[in-house]
Image (cartoon, rainbow, N blue to C red; front, side, top):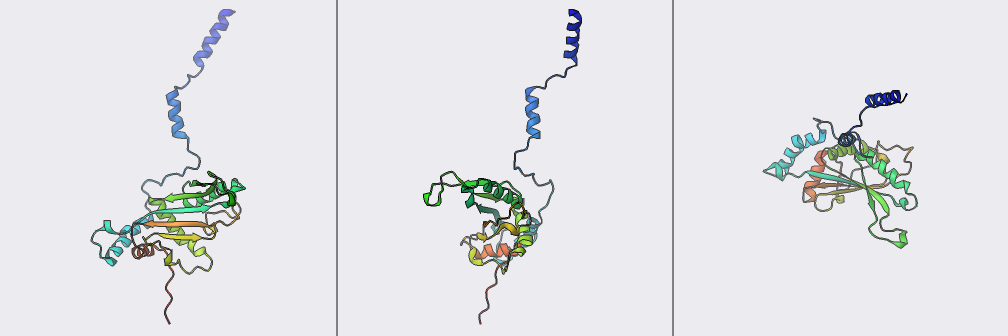
Length: 230
């Protein structure tokens, strides 16, 4: 009897699958696990429409307007920074998660949570408390956002007559303040009913406002026309 049970035990051990090595398990996890909030990369061979338009049309036009001899001297957009302040996060921590989700949908990239650098008792603010979210877009995602912003979001602004050229900072960078983020079609009104203000900064290599304005105008940014003198 003892021999039979021993034989059955050896047969079960032979049939049982071998446990994978630790190295193989770790490699498999690295391939399958995706960080929370991560955004898939751009498809291989995908061409951004606005980036192609800059190379083919905008760059030659700027070189002609400002008598530039080299394309390297031509002003270009380097990044777009989007900030959303969440003041109610002091009382409701879930507000910061909602703002983060909205900004991720708007930009197509996982945002960074911004925390208070110092405590202010009058505002009931403590150091390290989350107070906003920010995202910095470069390359293909920058041009994609700019294209969607100008084509889809700006026409949804109420009583819009163009952005004021005085929003430039003197070095060719444009700062725009929006009263509500509902102008972006990606935002779900049911999940995010409260309108949030946001600041968008378009950073360029222009060096002055004249070149910066010309660059963004050629890319499609609508600016307010100066009033005709009577």
